[in-house]
Image (tube, rainbow over the protein chains, first blue to last red):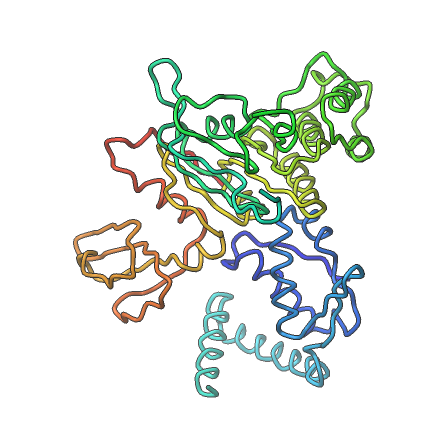
Length: 129
Length: 301
């Protein structure tokens, strides 16, 4: 079971944050096929948010084929996003850590590292698209 | 009218309330959809409390009409039972105990859910023998909400319910409220100064300024259709017709607009940004002509 949280400064609406957190957990293997998501009432009460917001997030996940609602039982994960790529996370993380060390040794501060990563990431994304 | 087909939980037409010489609310038209949690925001003196008191039937209109759950507000016992009201500062009878309050509720309300009320009081850790006057602000607010929910209303009206509470008490109050909304089919209208609470709890927004509804709609839809445009100075009157300008600010070389539109913005000379709820609320509050503008707005996070 995962627990949701909301970030007031994320720039995303509460419903988008819930969707993103489920996708994130699926990608990292924290949620697997067959896992139950917290009930709408549980999330609404825990985060003090509108139940319709939770419903909307769950419906979107359902629409994307990631979860399925079983009436009276709960909402269950039907597909994982981690697939085969999860095993590659470890080595990739090592590569990134090595790269980060190099960047710091070269004198980049946190902000420059983030900016460089993001601009490279966006640039690469455009090339693929 | 059947409950299932009813579209408005509150419908006001030309509604007004006059105290001696002064109109606290004037010529107000409003339609609030059922099954939503409506956030009512606006500056002090906009008429929010007066409107909510009229809806609860605690005040009678001086002009116009207001219908609540399909009937005139507070017309008879059945109509009173449909509406729960938590007034500003969540008042309770100071000399009565928590148990006395539940006993009163049981006797006065036909659909009273005693089991739920007792369970909530126990869960909140309130001592039934304690006098309400000695409860903390947070506990008193929880008691008021417990009573309002136990009468099993179709519509729950809350006037600035958490304004006086500390952050923890505020969170606990909103948790209890949202849990109740998830549990029962309940329409809620709450007024608040706290944009962050509205953002989490509400799915429908109404901005009221000087008795007039400035904007009303589904909260996510409103946020998705409002954009901030920043670019070189230019005349807002020459924008595409579908772009409604909510606010415009100019320096000698820059123009910043807040526009509402359903369509994508293609003009490459604008840098386009989304806006948050606070920006949206402030833009609409600020929109009224300076001559009728009220003293300083109170918006805080």
